[in-house]
Length: 337
Ligand code: UT7
Image (cartoon, rainbow, N blue to C red; front, side, top):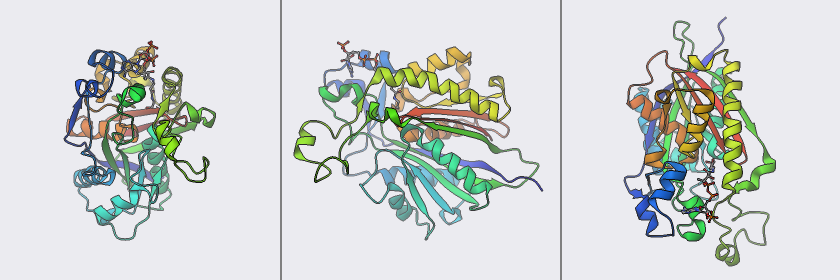
């Protein structure tokens, strides 16, 4: 009896049409194109038109492309896992609004909250659900609308300039064909909750006051993300190579066996530093942070979709995906297409 494997059958992405350049942000706060480019590598990002586009709208477009690429209909999916840190509402999760828009009957769906590593957490769970034959096909989505949650003013500039809106999706499906080597080869995940407050949004919160948000919290800016940037940077450049090497070892592969490296898009400097440390050639690393900024849980599936659109995910291609984010969370996945 062969062990059942799960493979990625199709990818998709969607970003809003509205382009916001560094110069546009400099109109709203004390920042500059030079500072943003030099510190992060970001040139522009996409923002939704507030009130007109929802997270589920972006997720739906990305999911529809992933389904079309895989040659599937929404009714072929058995379960939806959606990773996000910028939920459409307090509850229910964004996945339920995606569920409504896709028209997928009564299949289960759930939101996962593992921030910038969220897609890899969801991919790992989809892999397990498919390999244990619970489901044949799982739609895995990363989706963020950050633009309505950051403080677009000088007080919030250290975080606000880094983030963008977007969604990416993949179909994880069973592969029982022994002649087809496409598979999720290994996924490794970690977390360190003691650093939860180094990158977080405190309010609204169920532990704070009689109500989850007060006028005072809004005035104090406690509803906006706060980050100890240097601390996060230091941990990202340590944990990402560590977990990438752990996952390679789990998959019995070497760095040279990897055709494409897809690192989370938090900062181009982080990714350049990691590539340099590990001796990874630049042409094997895909980045899109210059065009989209940090789209958290959506960054890696967006990179995957861009790779597929560019014809870089041919049969046999081995891709390594690695992320680090709030929680702290970090993880890596090795996938053969
Ligand atoms: O996706 C989740 C994971 N996130 C990350 O991995 C992000 C990790 N951290 C980083 O990428 C970097 O720490 C940042 C890009 C966020 C910041 O770069 P940095 O070199 O660590 O800058 P800094 O925070 O130490 O700030 C340097 C200076 C400060 O001014 P002083 O104190 O030197 O006078 C800041 O006030 O830059 C100032 N600054 C800005 N100036 C212009 C902070 N934000 C801005 C801004 N525009 N947007």
